[in-house]
Amino acid sequence: MIRTGYLRWEIEVEDVRCAADALAREVVFLARPTHRVVRVRTTNHADAAAQFVRGDASYDSVLRTIDEKRGEVELTIPDVGPRLFRYSEADRAKMLRYWMDKLQREASAFAHEVVRVASSFTQLVIASQALRSGYARLVENEVFRVIEGKSKPQPTSNEPIRIDAADYQQGVPELVAAELIRDVVEPKEFHEFCQFDCVTVRNGENYYRIPRRPHALIEVWEVATKRPVCRLCVVFQDPGMPPSDEVVMKYLLAKHQPDLLWQTGVRFSPPRGKFEVTPSRRWTVD
Image (cartoon, rainbow, N blue to C red; front, top):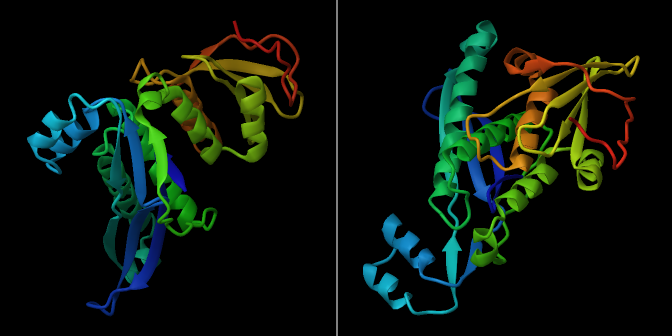
């Protein structure tokens, strides 16, 4: 399961033999909502206006909701896919790298399609192109977790869930991003995030400690000696990205692409103090 804003998706990936070509196989991508029905409580006619923009309602519904003080809009979330990627078995056997590159592109295209569908529900996804691009990378990462057997999709629930649009509109992008961390990191890492506002991840010979603050520096420590190595500055294109979304992006880089983290990050002097696996509440970065 992976989140895009308030929407949760169950990702399925199957590799089956092609019915139309005996020498070909097909990878089938499918994204199902964890909850099929979402009921959004609203204090104004913004939801009706959003439906009108999508072509799901007439302008009369917008006019009728102008004076309403409270209402509830029921949204039905569709499946995304199935999206088919057909390939030759010979390509996978003889040109594995070429086949993997094609699979990567197809997974990326499917991930952007999931985010495009999610973004059509303006009440449920943060209106930021940079964040939506980040969501696409998260969905793509979840696709490969499913392929590797590290994540298993759950059945879609027909029980509706309710959210309050007023809560969403008042700054809760950071709360949505914080909930996303729960789905991405390990349980002990999420506990650290809840208690100390940071996430520490080990990759190879280094620990990477990522604080939850805007544009905060990533501390790098040696595993063997516990000595500080440096601090890395990684800045994303969207200057208004919620701090918790920054934590997610930096965590994925440190966990899966540390080489890219070192290439793009600007190095600063090492952190001061002694490394602790469980940081203290006084832990700060100047």
